[in-house]
Image 1: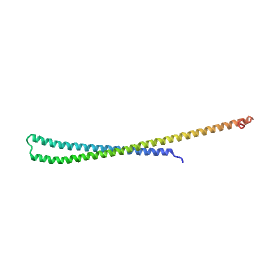
Image 2: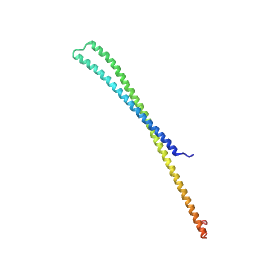
Image 3: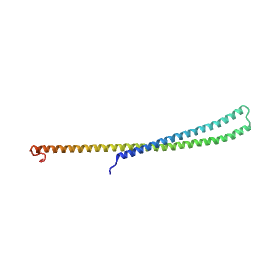
Image 4: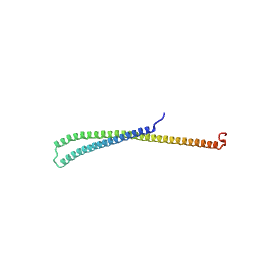
Length: 171
């Protein structure tokens, strides 16, 4: 069975193109996931800052003599709400990082497939080149054989025309 290395090379090139496109798409997905994870981190920082500001303002009010037990109860209730928001934001950060990690793992798989496709392309091209070189060498060898046969034939013909027996056939 003979392999059409040109066709194989074209097929491998197409596979490499598909793998390259897949890597590009996955890189874009990783970038989007990282952006979303960064937004989640910013929300967490904002919620933590909101809680810190609440207690800073409450402390300032008490230090300024304007604080009351009622304002402390309100601050405490609002602090619990902010605690929930901080917890949700922290969960968002964790989920965002999980998605980024998963996307990076997929990207690594795609990169590995691209490397394999590149190797397959090179192998197919190498085999195509080897085949072409082999065919060229065979053609050259056939041409050399034809030239030798022609030269032997011409030499024998000249010997016969000269009336001398050929010494080549008696050896």
